[in-house]
Length: 309
Length: 327
Image (cartoon, rainbow over all chains, first blue to last red; front, side, top):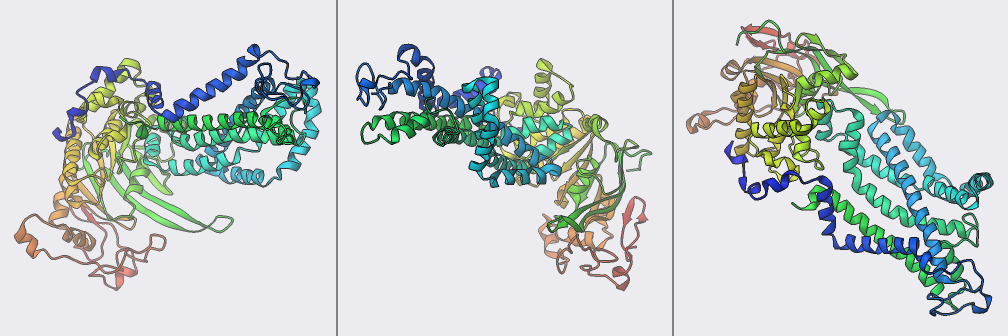
């Protein structure tokens, strides 16, 4: 079979290729994606600042210094103070912890739920109708009344069980997660429906690959792109939904800073101290943007066709 | 080729009807009769060619034999054992013995897996090899189908169509099957590559003692590959004979029409070649005509043809045909 052996493809680096792992390939490709690298850098910087910042900038975000209210940036208060004299930088740092945690956890819940429902509905015909009607039902639910009811029903018991902060955190994350998985489920289902008819899935069945393995090895990796996009958009959505909830008085208590909360509180004082809106807004935008870029880079890096030989 | 006592694969009255569902409640309003009552046997180490035009049910036959589709009726026997009703683990244990080579080499390889893991998947799934032994076996397989073993780390999109088809062949052979369904393995390839792949398949057959069901619509290629050939039309086999007999003396009018469409490479004979042009289109398999299914387009049909389905008759030793008029 002479023509099939184009030896120029293999000649140079035979020994080197032997031990190239999949994740090494992914990393090499990711490293070449400038946007993703910058995104990762910014995101790590934000995470570090939020995690370690309060150790350096040791002002208590709840401390009221009423004499120093509505101040501009100074050495003592690098981002100024609010109308009650609280330090804005300390609040942004403290709020970031909550916002990032809510964003990520809610996104993970939505993603896992959405992917699970999508894959099950797409792969197993018998439950497709049932799961998709369930998805439609969730999409049709009026969100705000539902939130009101859920929070009324569970807030106090959760607070009693886990303490006020953890209780509310669990509640908010759960609510955001449970109300934002539907888009992912629909997209994933559509892709799975198409994939299960592809010949490589038939080939896996004819080999005798078990259904679980077919899903994890052949289906899931090929629906990674839409999942990745949903994930990055989901983080942004979750952070913003949390702000809306806090704004309505359904989320964290008013004195508990989160980025969304700071943004909404600051909006009333935008003519007096515009930087109170600027800083949390910038933090949200940068986080969302950097996560989007990371997702973009990861998606490209995980696809061998885009990875480049 | 004298028929041997136990065929490797035998099908009896093999039938597949796909239901047509309509309306809100998905009621069954009819069925597409993709395959309608086939009987044939494949003997060890032979190649049975299965030819017919698009949509006549060829691929469905192959997939039913491999139990990728559940037959509506009929039986599939493998080594004399009825495998029609096998389920779960018993079916899984059978899988290594019968494998498939697919039509579209682009679509039959998972784009996210390396060639090594694609070819190694059957071995891992059945616990046939692991670690260094697995890698060695994969490299040996790649070598056997004429690919550089160093390709194991590459991805399918880095290969040409012919090379990808070789990867598909290597995967099919990984578990040392006895029986391989080749589902139009060359239809998606360039003519120059077709010959290579077909020759590879023949060589592997001789070396490994394989039995093939070779599904194709390329009549010349089938003649080159197959020992016996079955011709399908609209879900039924109309003629089955050794490849020489079929090409020298086709008995069914459909076979004659098919063969008349094959160009020859001899200009003189090509000049005198008479094409039998069939009138009309293939009837819908959801509503096949009564009597002989070919009667609506048959150039020699008589009244009886549209009333009574022809019997499956053996007119010469090893040459069977379903036609009232053939003799």
